[in-house]
Length: 122
Length: 122
Image (tube, rainbow over all chains, first blue to last red; front, side, top):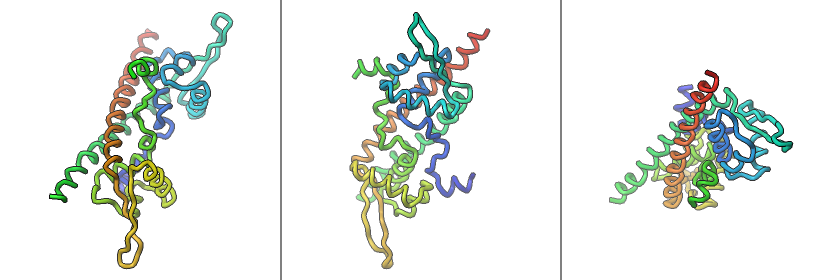
């Protein structure tokens, strides 16, 4: 792994593609903060998504075992509740660590750049 | 904007999709740290990408005005050099701020979750 890291320092293999997508990051962040589960309509509102988009992303997360959905009835109306699984939470925490490392790399690179250019021009 | 933020706190509109993709984050981080430019082959190695993938992502970044590429010859061999534009650097810095905010939201959510669950079980 060290060799790969030396070879490709900016490949960021820890940035799990299932979380590293804007809408899915919002969905998982919302669910992580609500272990009791969130109703589909509430999750949709919190993430600013359409029904279709939220359904599509939930399917991808369910397929990976990161999210479960359950269907019930409340006053005879169907109610879908979404939960983050234990595996989903663990993987999300790993993703957040990788994201923090990537953010540090990006911040360091962005900070060194312009100074270097000024030096060359001087 | 405040209304939208209240309505959809986890929509993360600042996560520019051009940067919020694993390979492109690696490409832009590499270029940000090298304002003198990077040769295509070197960039490919640093990001662990194939020729085809790097070309595809560079096209998307060029189209947005975030990256420029120039073709020269070195000892009669073609050499493509890639640069981050000033606009690209500015937008990347905005993206990094948005990413930091999203990371904080995610970390906070991940930390509150399990404790809450334990309380419910007790």
